Length: 249
Image (cartoon, rainbow, N blue to C red; front, side, top):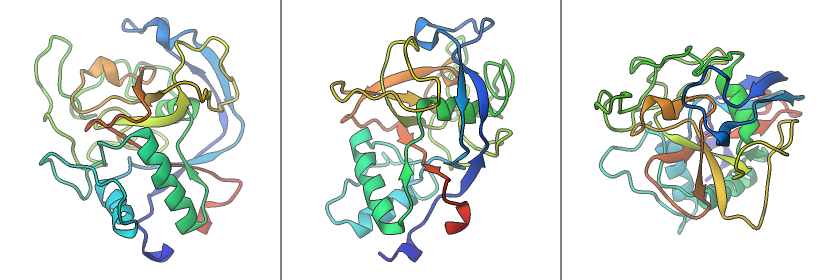
């Protein structure tokens, strides 16, 4: 497949800046895994996918690379739905293909970049404030365990964007990031870079999914998954360092 025919993601330029990463004092659902809250400096702007990577974008990779993993959609559909059932290791193979095909250094965002981009200048529990409705994000359960959402993934961009112009940062599908899992933030980088430990099999996911309760979609919420495991509610979003310019796309 020629580079010009590869479906590339819509990218949003995220400005440099500082923010407090982790759960705030007023977050009643905070855990030690989201502490200590600490200041992080994102010293360089970067680009982030406006939406999670879709089945259509992943399927173009499968078409170009015979033998590549083709994830099932379990009857929910493909096309503009966020791709799921891809592991962190699968994503690394996809990224290698995309870099070679386009000449652009696509990567996963770091955990700090992800939270900075999700918050988009806010300090509240969600970028929508301290509450999140089913008109603002795709999740299934209320805090009393009632099923109030659609109970499936929805096409990307079905809900309003945050102040940076990013959609689906809360809910729809959990998003893999570059970092190795670490219990809490003690001793982790404060410059926005990824924490990596090649000896660990666990990596970080962010954002929550369509089958979660709202409290698991919080900007500070973090979870882990094994690098090789595939789940239908875990996908990813592309990032790009922009010492190059977005015009190159």
